[in-house]
Image (cartoon, rainbow, N blue to C red; front, side, top):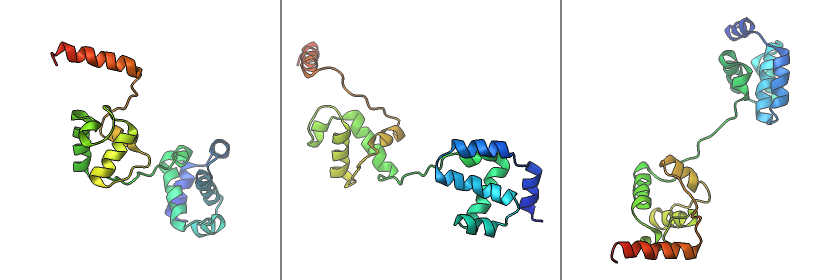
Length: 169
């Protein structure tokens, strides 16, 4: 009897809990993990489970090894994959400074406030990087937030005129 099987027998396998996790998790990739551990628990070898489920033996081993310390909860965790960064760390910091110290007009773009589209345009023209989505994820990585302006254009104009008068412009 193998080392992994001994550890699995020591941990145990609760059929009711397995059933709950199986029905709770509708994603097929999580169900494959759950089926793998169950079939291994029932006595099938890593190779047999891999053939039955059309996955690699290393995947079966990985799922059993996830189950041992974390149980069904570990198997039910969604898999997240980090998206590759389009900008280097230096480019991100330079972009952050641009956002904090200037407005789109200063860079040949329309508008006085940064919008998702103006940020995408700036990144495209400056770094030749095209963001189709994920611009708000980038802002989050830079510890910045993005809020929509809620004032109507007339109120903004009145505010800016009053603001300019206060400073003698």
